[in-house]
View 1 (cartoon, helix red, strand yellow):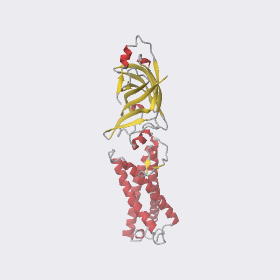
View 2: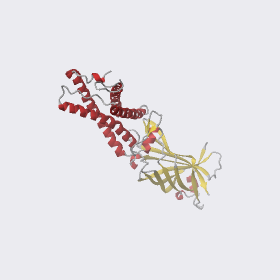
View 3: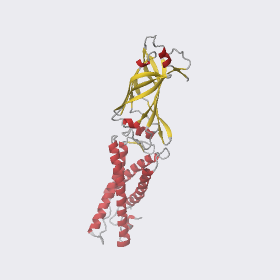
View 4: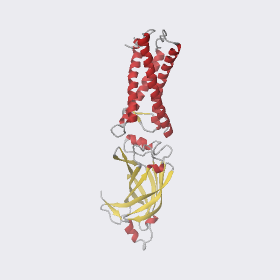
Length: 179
Length: 189
């Protein structure tokens, strides 16, 4: 039940999938809010929360990827799909994983380059992984924003594909990821 | 503890007849504060540079013979709250990795009011600009007016961060910094 089988996703993969789905939507809204708010004493801590939640996301995504290797997912259902659609679906999955890793990493690099300590909810300070540099900070925050937008687009594509399979092709793709 | 102002200009008035006697002083770090204030979120925030060293020569009878040379460690700068300290030391403001020190060297001093105006050059982030410090020298309450061994030096000035390319976070933090130095100085004989 925990592991993926030939027909269905196991419980671990399902939990990773849906928890991260909610998490990413939440972080996207959180990030957009941070970028738009007027910064003051009352909301300064939100930057640290975003960084801490981002690092937790990076951990979850790494564990999810590791699990994918330990317990490979069921094969893609090909019936009713054109070759280019299957290729696009595959590319979307690769992009989603790449972006899910890249987003927290670029945020971590940019925050490190800013020279401001990253505290994990006050428990300990996370090591800074880039030397202080205004150029690095700006460049990687630009990447961070770009990857955020790209991730939102690929999530939309992923959702569109899943809904098409569920409502048009009426196959098991979405159901086998559900509980 | 109350302090009395030592009138440099008054002493200066008697200088014509007296021989100039420059006195060497050392900073007592345990009772000194190189502070600055700036505005963030509508509030005045106070930061400081706890680590500095320097040489000070005061000629109470001929103020223009007085000199001061100070080196301030930027790597231990404090911004007033956690985020500000990181931002202050970071690449957009003091860039302490690249510029671990700031320097002030006096070029001239002239009596003014009860104190003196010390003109000199301040180097921050490798940028050197002329600055003028308003300096007063005080003695502790209860000490003899002739006290010269254990004194307090106060120096104030106003700087623009942008003059030194230290203008990061300019949308959040004021460009103007008010410098307020209060240093315990002890005569070195």
